[in-house]
Every structure is written in structure tokens, then in C-alpha cells.
Amino acid sequence: MSNKITLGHVHMSGCIGCCVSIADTYGGLFTLLDNYADLVYSLTLVDVRHIPKMDVALVEGSVCLQDELSIEEIKETRERATVVVALGGCSAYGNITRFSRGGQFNQPQHESYVPISKLIDVDVYIPGCAPNPEVIRNVAVMAYLLLKGNDAQKKLATAYLAPLMALAKDGSRIESDSEACGCDIMLKVINQGLCMGCGTCAASCPVFAISMEYGKPNIDREMCIKCGACYSSCPRSFFSFDVCGDYENILGAITAAMNPGGN
Ligand code: SF4
Ligand code: SF4
Image (cartoon, rainbow, N blue to C red; front, side):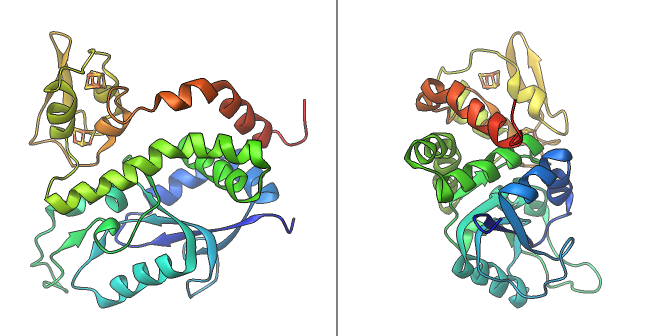
């Protein structure tokens, strides 16, 4: 279908777990590729060697500052993609690569890894280690509606993507040397009197670093891998009430898109 958007998966210093999450949409991935998006670049899945122009780039992994090729690739991605998505905790926040210190054979000088927003402007964040397959699918559908839909669909897509775009904008807080970690919910939610003890942060932590004690989250910082999932899943963090009003329509649009044959 010529009206499809073009989609790419750019693999920086990541583990391919985010790519597996793309595939974990199972039939959803086929529906996406049949109807809405052509996968024009992905070293894991497509035999295209150089980054082409594309509508949406899903970037996995952080960037090694001692690897010139990686720096070139991320800048090239920004130049060639209309929408750049930081896919997963490494790309968005550095995640486990924040602990990198170099000194290992055979590139001991490879020691500094940064989130992609340190080097380029990023439009949308999809945090999580690994990121949620449904959110990846939803962002792809919404990107399609934003770029190819009618006015009403564009409005819905904007409402859905706005919080994830706000999160990307907030990524610039990394400039102030703050970084994603369990401390975010401590500093920005609990210490602000916003925590309602729902436990979503504990459920979202991939390494069980958060336990609920006396109805409030307690973070084991030794276990935290700095993925940012807890803050981004907390309903008292960057939650947008604008989405609430449109929620049923957004859900309807995604359901209809994933069931294009009808009923
Ligand atoms: S506490 Fe858990 S969810 Fe939060 S940043 Fe650390 S590892 Fe990620
Ligand atoms: S998800 Fe947010 S509101 Fe819920 S317990 Fe965790 S910090 Fe509190």
C-alpha cells in the first residue's frame, strides 16, 4: 500500500531486546506491516546496510562516545527521520549502560555511554526495559494516523503521543545531570505529596527494586538499573488528563486499526 509510512529500527548500543519487543506484538506486527508501515531499515531484520530516509526511526540503545561510527549513525538518523523515537530505557535514559566504565578487552577505551538525547533532539520516548510491545504498536499506529490520517485522526494521535513527547522533552533534564532511576519517583512523586500508593511503580520495575512498604514504594538503589520505567508508568508523574477525555476514541482508533478487515 503506497500510503504506508516508512519505519526503521536503528540499533545503537542496545541488546536487541527492544527489537524483540517489536516482534512480541505477534499478529499485530503483521497487521502493521501489511497496512500501515514498510520496514525500510533494521540490521536485524532487513538487508539494507545504510540508514535511509524514513518517517519514523525507532532507536534502540545508547551511544558510546568513544565510538565515532555510533555518533555518526545517530546524527544521520536524526537527519533522515521525520520522527525519532527513543525506544527503551537505554536509548531514553542510558539504563544499564550508565554503569559502563570501560577497561574491557578489546576496546578498553569504550567507557562513556549516553542516552541519544545527549546528541540529538528526540521526539518521542518509549521507556521500559524491555519496552511494552503494546505501546510500540500503539505509537506506530498513532504515527501513521498523525502522518497520513484525516484531521480527526491527527487530533487523536496528537493526544495519544503528547505525554510521550513531553517525556522526551523532559529528557533534556539529563542536561542537568539528573538521570532516570528509582529516585525519580522519590523526588518527583513521593516527596511532592503526589503518591497514592497504587503500586504501579513496583509492578513495572523489571528487577524488583521497588517494594511496597506501609502502602508506599521503597526503592533498593543497589538493585536499580536506571531504566526509568517506574517514573514513566506512575499515574502521578507525567500523566496527561487531556488523554482521559479522548481515551475511548483513542482505544477505538487503535482497535479499528489493528482489525482493518472489520467487525
Ligand atoms: S527502580 Fe526499577 S523501574 Fe525504577 S528506574 Fe530503577 S530499575 Fe527501573
Ligand atoms: S506508581 Fe506512583 S503513585 Fe503509584 S505507588 Fe508508585 S510512586 Fe506512588
